[in-house]
Length: 422
Image (tube, rainbow, N blue to C red; front, side):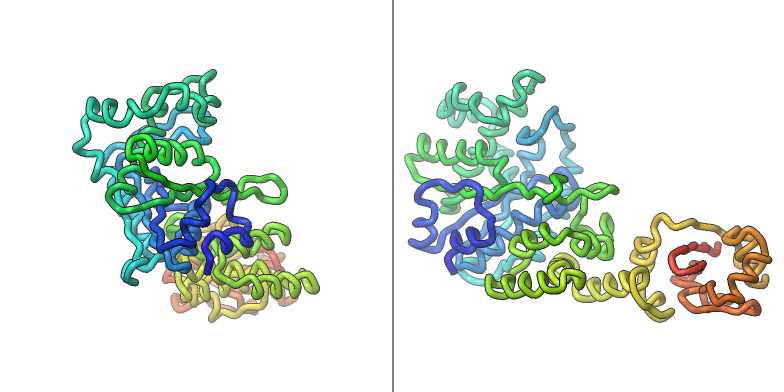
């Protein structure tokens, strides 16, 4: 496959330096993307760049994932309206380790010439003293050139520290080091990184008298103008302890039709023909959400696992479709709590299980305002415990506890209540 052609039809190219496509056509080419260790997990915004490296490797080229142990201590001003808080070395090292494990889920590190590599720029900066840096690197970049960058111009009125101003030099040197030591000829990144990337190609030209190339991807915009990857509760993370597989799956499932037609090209490995067929099928029956399901299934499996996907689908059916008590019991605690996050909760003691169901739902928990109301609803077959309809003589036992401590009560079709047994 032709790497640049692949990116073009997927809508994944924003800027490309002249000669880049010819470079990829000429030989197996090494290219890199930098990942910022500001958190101990990447989020789905990073998934765009990860997929670029996946496509690069699938097209026979060699991907480098640079984790910024050094640049993370400086902070990239691109797209930022104010100075970022700097992290200490211990935090950055923890974040680096976590991010590296996530990258290893996507790339093949043992496939010959195109084997992926993870590099840490702290390894070449740790012995680089300040005087050597400004003499050997700084002298190749004019102040006018650095001030012309959008990431700098946008901050001149509000203020920018020398630390952040120097970031483009540090990132530029990363590209120079990889070009010189790893024969890495292309840097890839988001469109907000163009200024930093071309600083690297300029440094390679001036200091190394060499030629390097650049490709950037568009920043994803949702059809409604909202920011991609953000929900009401914040970022959608790749780490399941930060965003459960169920919520991750739901994020893709809830995409609009217009966004789904964009996402399926960017975040899946389906071919152009497969995607065109899915879009055509989706347009005939949009209510079936064929596109959203295809994206959600492939991305959830890749980021998490097939087992996590199946649990997410089971969890979705509990709220939005027909489900059984067995489906409910199949959920692990994290998924279960994620599904029922925000529903009213009540806590009872284990000894309260000896009470009748009317006492539990009307007096111990106030799910119902009175026993009379509870009795009427139960007799009209409108009350469920753990997704099973109950009668007035139903007795909850310890065997009914989900994950050893939860009871799910349901009043009518849509009103759920979580009872925690302490």
